[in-house]
Amino acid sequence: MPMKELKTDTQNELIIERLLHARRYSLTLNRNLCKGCEICSVICPREAITIAKVPKTNGEKAKPPTIDVSAQKCSYCGMCEPICPFGALQVRVNNEHIVPVIEKESFPNLVREIEVDASKCDAGCVDCEKACPLNLIKVRVLTPEGLEIKAEEAQAHPNKQNLRVEVNIEKDPCPCCRLCETKCPKGAIHVRKIMHGLLSISLEKCPQGCQDCLDVCPIPSALFLNGDGKVHPNETFCVFCGVCKLVCPVEGALQMDRKSIHHTPVSSGAWNKALEKLTSTNEYSKEAKLKGWLKAQQAVEKRLVFTKESGA
Image 1: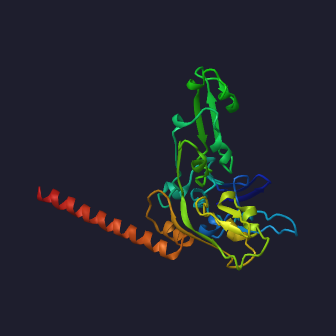
Image 2: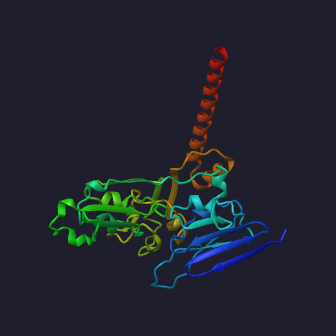
Image 3: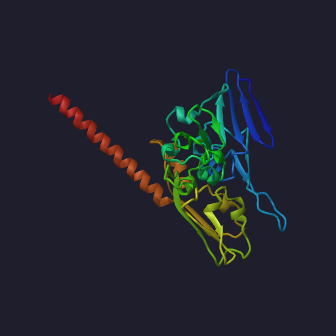
């Protein structure tokens, strides 16, 4: 069957394509959204995604690793797209956005549980917009006539009590760090984290003056430089993408373990393998046992229903 493989790599995006007789597959990596984390490469079943550290000279800040995708190895299964916490990947089939593993129900989507009650917002408050490290939040202030005004104009507006506030959050690239929720003075935003885990830094092994992990962290509040000159973690805001671990120059200085992932229900060998790679062994075993228990419970319920219907 005629086949052609293409690869286009620019500053803003990487596109690989496979052209068959009747189908055209493509995978696009948005480099502006990609943070150079390890997740897509860890779960790729064909090892088509590779990560390369960016060397730095003395005095230069560390840069996030770069991602490359092999046009020859990629099967366009789409596993990398739904698992990316930053929404940086997209698979298309015949120019339509289709994720094969989602279509086949063999892989889950990450659940981005983000709720906003704009009725609680004060007109003119943009604390959540300023707090978002990825610039995914836009606050709009509208007059009763539908005219948008600047947030700083809202406080002195003669009809302030009737101004309407809209809080728009781009959910697809949001890793759910919860910074917007914690910075909102009115409790108008609720965010449930996608990933939970443990992040620790050994003060003995961490080199004095080194802040490579802090330089590359996409959520700056997840790591902070303390008065002792060492970087300290804050798991409250960590999204457990793993980019900090990738750039750490000392083995064992930074430890990160994913404990749970908030995802849509799914039961498949593909997801089980991916979950085993992404999380610690104990947590993988817990989810596997839970799935087994739920499957057994469903089987019992089906038997009970069948017995009841047969007796009737």
